[in-house]
Structures are given as structure tokens and as C-alpha cells.
Length: 424
Image (cartoon, rainbow, N blue to C red; front, side):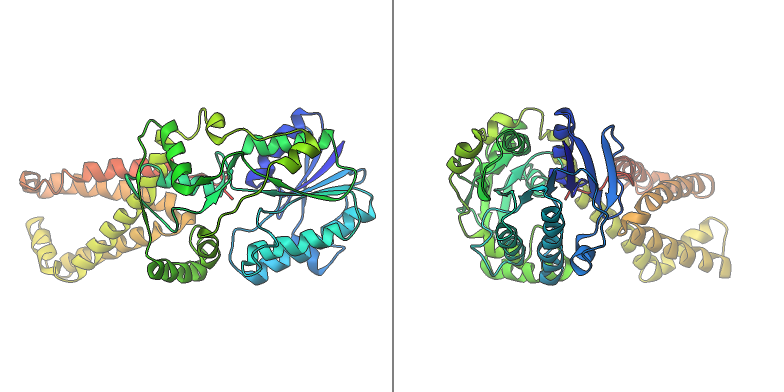
């Protein structure tokens, strides 16, 4: 059948698309820009749920659509934005689907309706209630934590997994994680055995697990022993959460802090009775992911970036401050004095600062990394030609540039390309 897949570029949407195509379905996938992977059997349309919530005619309904899967969602703590997209935008989408007699599969979240103080869950619950009140042919799926390559929470957990001592907001609250393959299998089972009446179904794994247990499961796949865990002090966590709200952090904000201390559990029986499907234990699905290389890369990249930013900006500050006279002496040894030496020291410091700042913006990061490699090589050549005595420095200040070049190359080669969107 023809399926409208809203949120086709997201974590859940991408996996569903592959599975639905394998089952022979035709997909009309949406994203805000109307762009995504070009696959046989998939056409793309632009859909902005926020705009649709304001204007119900802002989307051209694909003729012949039999099922709508709403897998769109926002990873933000902004209550206004969540209400506009996840609530009002979804309502408008449901109205369109109902007016065209299409079935509706809504991806909500486990806990929706139970935590009205959490904007993400409150907006999901409001859209769920509206959908169920339409008396349309619909299913509301409320998944627990979904684990798999490319997922937002999965990326955060794998980034933590290499650490021997892991700080967490809470170490005792339990969830029922399931693998993304089980989520996809549950959807396919529902399509084969669609419920006769509107229904809400929890989608959970069979085992309640704490975050330390989940991370230790991921560590075991990578060949590591269980880690040690420490709970972040409440005041420190609250301060970080408020900062996370301002900076739109996904892993730490007031929403995640409120949810961290609560169990989020449900019975798998309703889904089993409705479709005959049961999710497997998480460890049974973890075969080729996560890998040690992926996890270590995810952990070390931000650390390496922070170190390089500190080195380049620190060098600039030193050259313009306490190291200025030293820089002039080096220039004199190279045969440059007066305004030329001063211009070289100041110009080099400004260039260092620009390249350090360039690392902070993803748009300019690749260019900054390439320029840093070129500049370090140029410095080494100039020093070799004009002041070779610095190669005899007992601290190997020039030779250590080789280490920085290798580190910079690693960052450049592991930097996501333009077509690689960050996980959502």
C-alpha cells in the first residue's frame, strides 16, 4: 500500500523506511526540506508540521495514501516549539488523514499523559488524545527508550560507555529499552494485524533496566567489564539543566532532569495481544553495534576539539600578551626586526585565533582543520630554514607539531560530511 511517512529522515523514520520498502510498500516520505535518501519506491515531499499547525492547507495530500505514520518529533525543551509541532502540527496532520479515510499510526512516548510538567510528553499526550477523539482508524504507539545505531539517546550512551567512571543524573530509575529492530518488527506486525478499534499500545522491552545496566550491556558488547557509576549531586544537576535549557542541550535539561528519577515502565502484554509481537531482550539484538572504535571516537572527538580550541586560542593570547617579546626575539633570530617582526607576531596570533574559533562552528570546521594542518607544516618548514636551532629544544616544541598534525587529521577524517546529518 501507499504510506505517508512523516519524519522520514529521523532515527525511527529511516529504519521504518527500509523495512517498509522490503515489504513491498510505496513510501511518500516527508522532511522539512522535502529531501532525503533517494531510494526506489520512495518519493519525498516537504512538510513542516509547525506551519501545518497554523495553516491546514500547507501540505499537498498524496493521492492514494492508505496509512500515515507520524514518526516526527523534536529533541528540545522549548514548550512553545513542542506545542506547535508535536501537538498542533500533529492534530492538523490527523485531520488531513481522517478526511481522506487513511489509517494513522502515531509514535508517541512512554509516559505521555503521566508527566504534564514535561513539555515533550505533554505535547505528545495532547496530540494522542486528539487523535483518539477523532474516531479514526488509528494506533498510538508509546515506545520506551529505543536503542540502535543513529539514535540520539543511543549516541549519548555509547559516548559514555568507554569511561571507567560514569556520571549520571540517576542510577536507580528503571526503563524498558528495546532495539530499533524490534520497534520496526512491531510496526510490521501491526500492519499485518491492524486493531479493529482506536488503541494505545506501550512498546517496551521485556526487561526493566537501570541506566548503569544498559550502559554495562553496551560495554559488554565492546569487550569491556562493568563500569563504576556516580550520581551527579542534585544542585549541580539542576544548574546544568538550567544551562542546558538555554543552550538547547538534548542530554541535559530540565525535562531530562525531571524524568531521570522516575521509573518509566509498562506491560508488553497489550502489544502482544494486539499483534502477537514481543520484543527481545536488548542484549540479544546487539551483534555488530556498538563497536569499540565508534564509542571511543564519539567520546574523544569533543575532548580533542576542546583541546585544539584551547591550544590555538591560548597560543594567540600568549603571543599578544606575555609571550610578545619572546616572539620578537624569535623573529630577530630569523632576521626580521622592527615593524615587520611586530606584524608577523600580531598577524600570526590573529590567524591562530581565527583558526581556533573556526573549530567551534560545524560549518567552518573542515576548512579550519585543513588550514591548521597547512599552517603547522608551513611553520615547521620556516623554522627548519630560518631558525633550525629550535629543533634542538629539549622539550621538542617543534617536533610535537607532528602529534598535533596527526590529531588534526583524525578530527578532519572523522568529521561528519554535509550529507551526514547528526542523529535525531
